[in-house]
Length: 77
View (tube, one colour):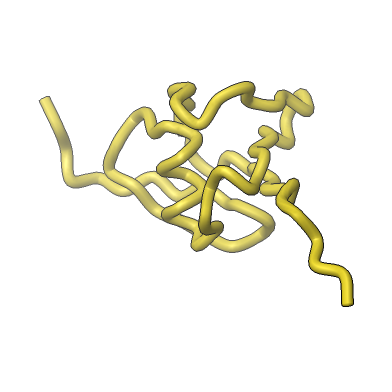
């Protein structure tokens, strides 16, 4: 049964909230404004766990902290 209770979590220090117990890596990145998500890698700060795929399901725990790292091309001028 789905509840309306929101769980706070953080991506690069910015607070996010969800009513879901699990989100995909893609959803975590997009919800935090990291677009396109294909150019980022998500790491769970606790245990330094890096997720291998944008479709990986991530359990969201209260006050969980993640880091999004840019891996896309860097423009050269």
